[in-house]
Image (cartoon, rainbow, N blue to C red; front, side, top):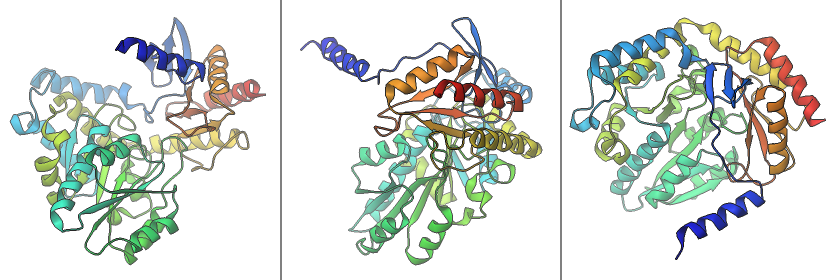
Length: 393
């Protein structure tokens, strides 16, 4: 069999239906500007919501740690890669999230894999009926991959459809561990989980809530501690996953929960056990980032103000329901080809925005996915709105 011929045939089909993906070479200049092919563009395509990847105090903390401890951590956490800087960052994360403990991982993807694997190991040993995952249809691919990869029973419920979820919980076999999996802020639509509804449901049925706070951490809640904290509902969250590549501006992820669950991750979470620890410089940078977010609440206020400006400015133009102050602002277009064409025309106008197509989003919902940074100015957002209106018209 000619493997390359098979691959090229499949790639050609992707090109035909406008789903072929290429990686652009993008040089980030600052939190709101990039350079592509020699052209300087205002960018609305980054998840660096607070611009912390360019913050000089964060960079200085990372450089100091790198000078003292080297570039890499040298080993997995269980083999000597868990330094005092890692331990300090885990304590800072736990305080930030209001949990007993946390465990650092190399990415948010791996954090979700490790959380699900740990839950599966616990559930399978807890009783004859084992475990079942009840998963919101729109959760991140890493959560779907994690559950499917474990071969654990999984039932999908329609996005935020708590009546359907309630029926699933009511029908569950006695003694079977039920795990509800959702995100606090959904990455493609910019809407939120119905955490108040889940709190009410949890009073009626016992279940474990696994909440991915990737796009809420740094944006919502006191000190940026998340959407559950914003609503005063941290107590209903059993396991919280944080991604550092969004509001914290670096790389990596963490699982936050009880001391018992964190020890479970260290013992059963294979993505943690068999991965080299994140570099000490990253751990130091994220801890400094948490500190700075707490000291600068105006960053959140600025971010949410600019987000409202963008969503309100595009109101009625192919919008999907979402939080009015969420920095994720999608504009739904007719098909893949139109999404790519609008993104191209926006680039000609000086803006870098993302065209998102199937299979990342359902067929028929190709879109521009625009993201706001706290460092964007009112003028930049206003000009983006006018430019997009002209292009779509």
